[in-house]
Image (tube, rainbow, N blue to C red; front, side, top):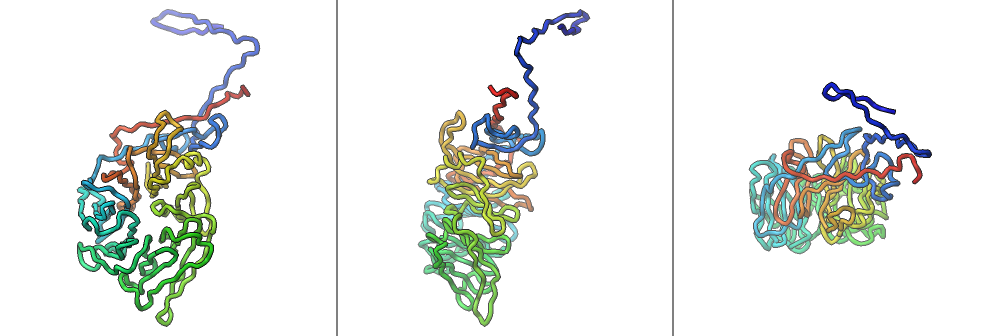
Length: 408
């Protein structure tokens, strides 16, 4: 057999070696139906359209696997500080990112250019950890501390931190049904109707004595017209808040007594669901049914260092709304072979990873002009993630190991 080719007008012949006896032609492998990562099975056993590793590239559609944008340069630096809690709120029509620090100080950073930084509380105002906050209307923020009490910023007085009640303590806070709700141990305390600072009138409290709450309340979270009360292994849903004769009533139902979260920064909304993390994986609460989402990447989950923060948020990447979880894990999967932070990203039932910096600790989502945008703090620097299309970013793609149609 011969093939003919033309080069500079001269006919050339090239011999093709005939196949040996028993030899079979290997079929071409065309791989364009991109799915997500699967690290649970050996590389040769995953589905043909899955990846053994997928980092900083997004599986969008058939034949579409673009590299993601890089993070921005540092937008704001909290000199001499170490961030231990990160939140977002819209105050007076402007979006801000809030940071609470190990020194007990707190900062407000404008979420758009010029990223103006304001110190809203001096060192020692708050505890070094365990501080939580929530947005109250567009007036300001309410803050709860497990030791220092209950505060507001910019509500009682403009650009002022006000101690509302030194005796009201807690570790979680939410605004729901025109009230502030504060969680402390097994008790939830709530304000009067349309009040952020009065616990009189139709205000009050209740204690969860049910065995479904195994330990204490870890997070209060508002979404889908409900107040979710999370314990480390349970979730209650509170709704239908009414007032009759000056007394507040509501319904509270336990939707699961087996799955919850001890990681309050990992809880965030995603479409009509609530997503969260715990030591066994990443979950979504769809209506009243919790569902595990992370089966395909559970080997990575088992390598997470849960002594470090785990946080979450939603973000548009290539115009697709994605759910993102930031954590530090012991990377034995790649040549890096070291503990490093990564972001596990989920959309369309696909998982993939992004690395957007070497020291990231907290991510926080901000809906800028209706578009979910993700920011991150390392020790004391703020970045916008998936922001720069010109910045350098390394990617890693590993496909399945195909057998080529042969058993050996």
